[in-house]
Image 1 (cartoon, helix red, strand yellow):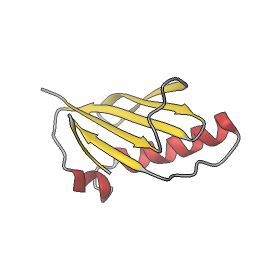
Image 2 (cartoon, rainbow, N blue to C red):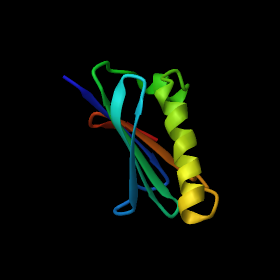
Image 3 (cartoon, rainbow, N blue to C red):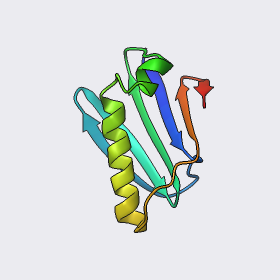
Length: 95
């Protein structure tokens, strides 16, 4: 069974431009970008902890965050200003 992960920067975009890519053995990573709002979603067969994500031990996370910042800058022609980060593992979340 796969575990769903979602990282929201500021607020979850309701619409926007969606980008899909693969990192290592994890296909279908989805980055959704709208002005000053980003979501990163992926699934993995291994369940990771919130600490794994917040301490950037899961290499997919810093890669996705870099890509999200770059995509926002290219798509919206402005820097992303992060006010809040919410991480979901399954249905559980932490700010």
